[in-house]
Amino acid sequence: MILMLKGGLVSIEAAMGSLKPMERKVAQYILEHPEEVVSLSVQKLAEYADVSEATIVRLSRSLHCKGFQELKLRIAGDLSQSSLPAESYQEIRTDGSIGELIKSVSHNNIVSIQDTLTVLSPESVEKAITALSGARKIGLFGVGASAVIAEDFKQKLSRINRWCEIGTGFDAQATIAANLLPGDAVFGISYAGQTEDMIRTLEIAKQNGASVITLTRFGSNPVADLADIQLFISTLEKSIRSGAMASRIAQLNVIDILYVGVAGRHYEESVQSLEKTRQAVKAGKRNG
Image (cartoon, rainbow, N blue to C red; front, side, top):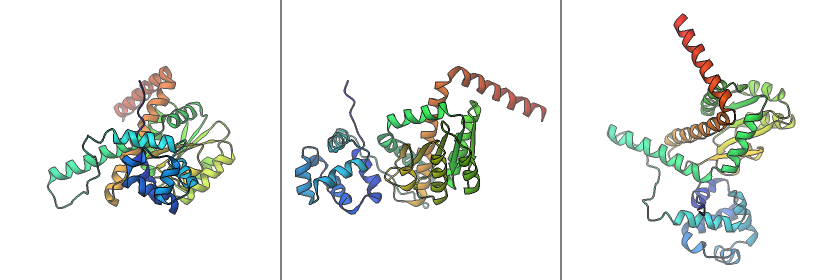
């Protein structure tokens, strides 16, 4: 069975804001002529888009493809689904009915997860699970809305007896990072990937030999560029309000994937730890 690669068009749209001007030029051409592009050579696309061949190669790498051929395969995979209704984000109206509100928010969350699946690398997920499973200590970093995601991951990992500490500000993050050792792991969560404090603390963790894992929106950004293992989500809606909500759902979905993967690497131990923590919490409530 041949695996059909997808996500080329979603990746281009998600990365558009972080592309260099000439890369953005050819990316726009691809979005406007996807059916034509899948049958073009690098030379022909360069001619039609009025860019250099090197620009197309750089674009492919910016989109985390091994080359232009893989990008074409992903676009072809997208086009193979063209007979299905196009899924796009809906603007959330505050003056509509409650029924419309329920449908719009739920629809955007579903599309966010679906789009993220096209840019989430199975190889990177496996590497992240391996690094987290083998780490002596895990540092979880998140600021603002991303701190909520980090707190959720900490609660899950703590239940299966993974030693982790959370930092939601520079002082806490720097303290944790300074005490990490080779073989430890740090997981930085930042949707935009521009958080200055996190960039500084990830650099400290990296200098100490810890594995750096990041979860950001798709595309080049300073936080992801520091990572040994990059994980991405994709949310393409234009509304700031709905963007914050949909990105959180996509991030939580990735966290759940990692949690189940880590628990599976230590299945018997995880089951025992979950039961111990359940009993401890139950006893605490009964005696409280």
